[in-house]
Image (cartoon, rainbow, N blue to C red; front, side, top):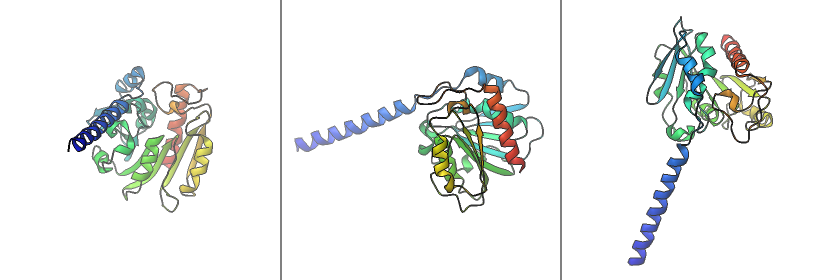
Length: 240
């Protein structure tokens, strides 16, 4: 009996340590650049609401009626994507950036309606994400309410080739994490109409404002230029 109790205590201890370790690891996020976020908060063309599960960015001028639920990359501060997506909001797009469970998209099993409910005025929804957030977005794109998919340095792991989704994949030529080879290998999982855009000089971390990411390439494009090209790609995609 004593052996059994000791074994049980050992198992419980291992589980507790594993949980504590996971919580500690997941809490160590790549922090967003404060100055970049403040620029967006002070932008009169954008209204921002922060909830316990999302950051909602709406245009203060007439909205287009389109909305994007955007999922951050693994362990990246959701606020790090505000500046990148702000150009599209200025053009009329409503953006809801999710705050993933434990900062990891795959632990977040909340339905898409959790986030679309934050902007009931939107008529047509798109879903997207960066890196592993994009992989999760591909799964959420199964919803009948989703018109299209927007990927930042990402690709699908599930087969969407037979769907009617409109798809935009934006890649960076200096991205050494979601490399062009990986994106090309996964391209057959997307509809044949998928649009692919490569931004020259952009690396993986350049899709957000959170500094250097281990294993990434070195960007050779300025942040403002990258933001402008990303905005143009999204606007062209939505217009079509």
